[in-house]
Image 1 (cartoon, rainbow, N blue to C red):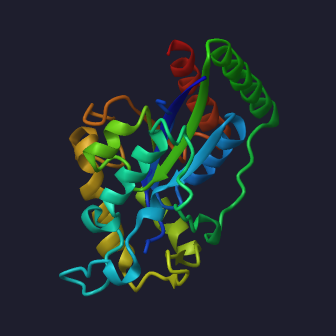
Image 2: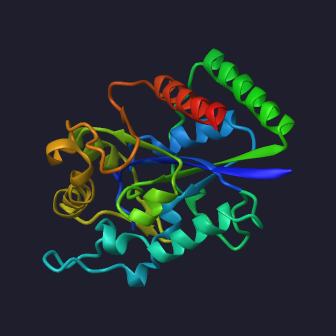
Length: 266
């Protein structure tokens, strides 16, 4: 039986500093924006699904660049915040025929070390979409195809062209700067790959995090306006979710509708 892997990207800005063919939804967005919560709800709904966290491809702490002006480690500037070659290699491995949508066994995630707030969704909506995708799975199996869903969440998903091109669906969760700053300050820190806890130095948000976010995302939104601009087509098919306008249930519903259309039209 043929395996089809779908990559779903979910992205947004980091509000806490960092340190087959697959049907893959990609989630990109700011730290503390809700992208990981959204990805985890989708994992509960989609059969044969896994989550790949972009944070797991951050460099070891000793290799994180030092900001040339402020003299502190810069976990947020796109060029040095992610080991891009390693991430591309991992996505390639997940999509390969040999892997069949499985995360390579040598990949180690530290997402479980970071605190996560529970944001429930409507149970009737959950049950409805779960049944829908179970039916979709049956339909594909009758055609001799197994679907594997890979949610990719991260705060820089749409910066590297090769990563963007590998994603089948692209979702961006936007939250205003003021709200993101508050959420980040409410978190206690970020666990690095080495297991240590990184805490923001004074003024880190204003000097490092927010400028890096704007620099990485202005090109994909109209007028370079990361807070109000609509997608300008630079990232093909980008679906924009407004984190302070849409409830988590509404976001799950919208993304599931997108994935259903893609799976049934494939």
